[in-house]
Image (cartoon, rainbow, N blue to C red; front, side, top):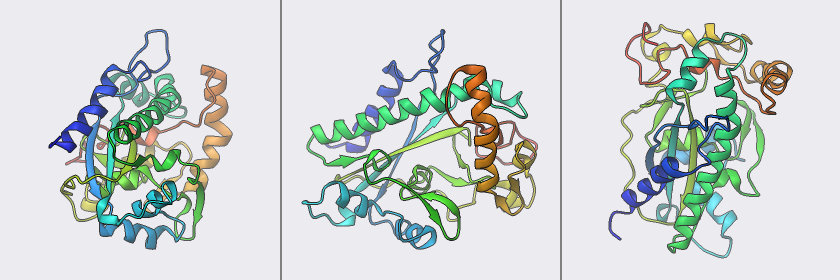
Length: 286
């Protein structure tokens, strides 16, 4: 097998296209996600060390995550590849969500619950495909050692971030609300697997972690601030405490009572904004 990147990308996209789990769990059996975007980064990429230094000592580099999963196997960081993907919300889900101003739409809530269950299934599928082919692999967020944490600098955090892995892999940059702006926009979910496999890293088409956010690049936009019912987004950034409080107090009960789903969902800042479904060039988009 010579085209390992193509093989893995096909495994991810074909699973998304054929798996019955890629569903909103509604009567119409609608797809939860559109076609994934896939990219790769090397385990020795200096950004992973920078993330650890920036977020906190608890944050795992790819090599540290791999070593925890395979403690008897010695590996060098450069022998590892992080496989990252983006799952875009469907047109129907985004259209519904644009109309909301206080609570999540039903499709959005379903994508958060059933769609994330598919994302977990996709992580297992990718890791299994690799392991069965002789390449040791793990999905860090599904590992027993994955945990939430508190960053001294950023507050609520965890020891592995799907969004940050996607950023390092060239898939997107962060917006004012902390969402990842990708070629498919910000209305997305992310996933990743770390594997002992040699794949050419995807070239990052940006040098700054805010390169796709109009607020940071043009000094204007801020549309996500007006979309947040919790007042958790300001020019100072994303207030995670206010955001989490709104999820717990308001949207969890709403989603449970209205749709019979127990999940934390909101995501209003990801729609009716210029970066909803693309990399924006003008604050009038969206």
